[in-house]
Image (tube, rainbow, N blue to C red; front, side):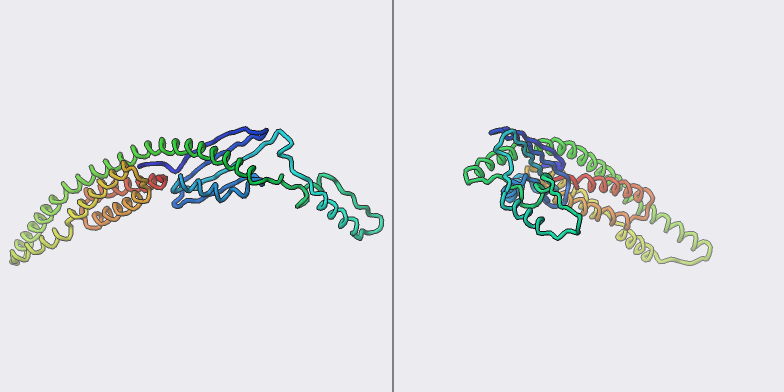
Amino acid sequence: MIQSMTGYGAAHHTENGVDYALEVRSLNNRYFKTSIKLPESMQSLEPEVEKLLRSRLQRGSVTYVMRLRSSGASGAYAINADVVAHYLSQIQDLKLPAGVEARVELASLLSMPGVCQAPEQDDDSRAAIWAIVERMTGEALDKLTAMRRAEGQALRSDLLSQCDRIRELATEVATRAPTVIQEYQQKLRDRVAKLVADAKIEVDRESLIREVAIYADRCDVNEEITRLASHLVQFAKFCDSPELAGRKLDFLTQEMLREANTIGSKSNDAFIAARVVEIKGSIDRLKEQVQNVE
């Protein structure tokens, strides 16, 4: 199944005077990587959120951002009076130079570590919040997955189009390959005939046949063409498989490039060399596109 790793999903919910806003984004990555940003009061839910993401997504860089906005007193942070008193006590104990007075601004004091603390949550409150987060995450992931699948269909069309082009070029190479050997044989005969005529040297017919056979074996690309065709069949099969196929497609493109390079190294013909360049260009296109397939 072709599914892109690029997607976006969002969800919103309001309950008990608290507005929840969630955004989930994903980009291509060879592995699965998460960046989870939760409000301080929900930090304990991060392992559960990551577990939920892993259950739905296999590859990609996933950014998960949850924001809260409370319109009631229930979301207000509590001021720890003991911590405030301790800060003030330390300030009073400071030995300042003569003529210097200590002035404490309330806003600065409230920003000190430990002064403002998130409201305490009991087990029932945490369970209720997790139920909201779980439901919103599922909704956002449904939207993200739908976008990834839609883009995956566009990727599939482009990938199969490149495969068709590679297949056409490989057919041209396979058609041309026997002609190359025949042309080499004729050139060798003409060269030998010229040597015989000019220097009156006799050439053993068996040696001539052996030379042509060695060249034919060295330039034979039938095996590579067959393997390349097999890779193309497998590639198309994985594109329509119900399983996620990103890693398999990536491996197949590497194997295709290996066969193309071998064909290029064996050929001693301008026509075949030009087709190999085009084949490698299409394979590079495949490799680039496959990097975004989950």
